[in-house]
Length: 185
Length: 160
Image 1 (cartoon, rainbow over the protein chains, first blue to last red):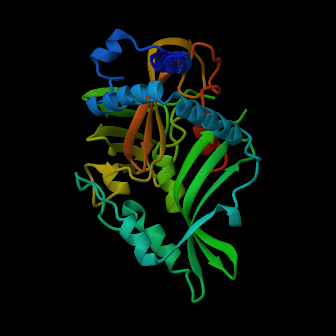
Image 2 (cartoon, each protein chain N blue to C red):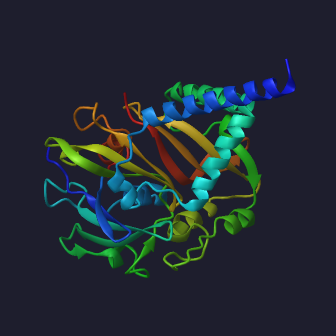
């Protein structure tokens, strides 16, 4: 088999896979009406479209990698759907890394170009942060966490934040975000 | 159950209804509770908020509501130092905007089911990607995830 034929076959397979993936994506999302484009509602920025075009070319050429990434994403999505229902509780597996207060306050300083939030740690939520840090005593360790949980109606959430680990056990916590993952069945 | 008045959001000078309540997360994350009371069955949360997307960020630009002492509240009541505009950095999730033809009306949620939902992802107040999802094959007010989970928050776990 000539190298040219192998290359053409490789690109043909890549193109087929990309087309199938794009059709699958389009089927899951509604079509865009011409009026939507005129109003700019679903029009990506030029940069985003360039990224999409680059990704398509990448996928055609390196389709084995694209297939692998697709399978990994599917596996992760399935795993996400199988979150065992549990009430909110920060467990050892939810801990990410150790921080100092100074490090946290540096990265969590809110910066807004329109000055619509105080340029302090956690902006409009600074009071809650201060109440949280006042609970820290000697020997405590500050960890970041991310935890998934579900409520009594089986709606699933992901909460992120910081937690005081005291004597090896998670204690008081400060939520920085709370996202809904899925509603109840 | 009565259909609820929605918040509104301005995007590129066009005002849209907003079928979610980003302000709920502010109370949730701050460990405080809403001081608003309901004076109308169509407004059980006790306030109407006006939002805006500007420079790829979500801002709270207006607020009207009734407090427990029956006094009227505005944006300055909740954010005294920012009476005109508040950066909603506390919000991460999806903004849900109804779009298209009204397919069905009902006396719950926001009063109807529209052809599609425009979903705008927000992370710590910063706008991310957006997409449309079709509502053509769902029925009733509680099948449009994750909007109904907002109701869970309002009437369930995070209710004041």
